[in-house]
Amino acid sequence: MNKLITLSLLILLTLSFSCKTAVKLGKKDRIVQIDTKYGAVKIKLYDETPLHRDNFIKLADKGFFDGTLFHRVIDGFMIQGGDPDSKGAKANVILGEGGPGYDIPAEFNANLFHKKGVIAAAREGDRVNPKKMSSGSQFYIAQGKVYEPEELDPLVANINKKRNKEVFENQRELYKDELIKLQKDGEYELFNTKMEEMKSKVDSIMNTQTLVLTDAMREAYSTVGGIPHLDQAYTVFGEVIEGLDIIDKIAAEKTDKNNRPLEDVEVKISIIQ
Image 1 (cartoon, rainbow, N blue to C red):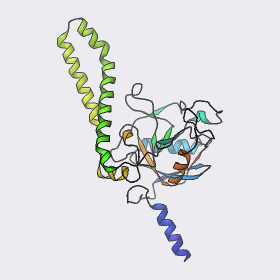
Image 2: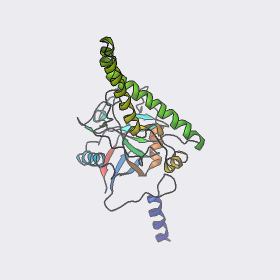
Image 3: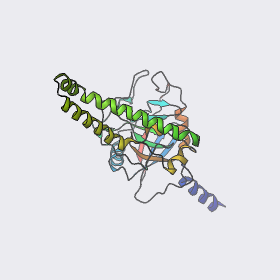
Image 4: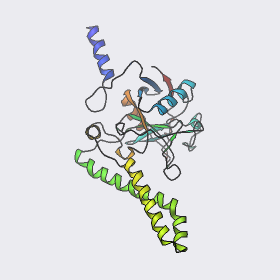
């Protein structure tokens, strides 16, 4: 009987919360554990995002995250942490600007998407961060919502429409002064050439940002849920393999107007594999 119970527990621990497949763990997979007042969350870091994986391991090994808070919590969206300024922060202090002093190049992968339970890197907005560089330490764990299958195509169409508009506006801002000068000087041929250059740049960027749902994404978003509008915009670099219920408990914390929990949710992060 004891052997059967042990075997059942081992099977449960390796089951994925996403779709109907198991999270395959190899001997070389890197696993970290986030300890909170609600219990432990175990996360597998993806080999497909080595820059983010290795950076997270390095910081965890140094104890960088220990004592930091989940400083931004939005139920139905995500929980965010990793700000060193949150260590011992007084109540009502606005957090979210701290880091180790460097950013990480984006590592987008169409197969790594924002299903519930993935860990991804926070970052500055597109206007000041057009390359979508990741914060050196701040991260979030996705919660999101479950979508009806028929909701997904209209949702994706709206996401891509919004992205296209944002990319165009960002590029227009970059080209604006030069275009105004060319028009003012009567350099209409150069003006048209520059407009074509801008359009080409917009098309190039959108080729990398256009969201296309795979079958795996459709199944995940309509079963466990997630945050589709963040796909290919923020780097996903791991996923929860144990303790997904703890994410829901933290997300349900009462917060102030800046989405900071009224009661601190402190973390300790350790490397267990």
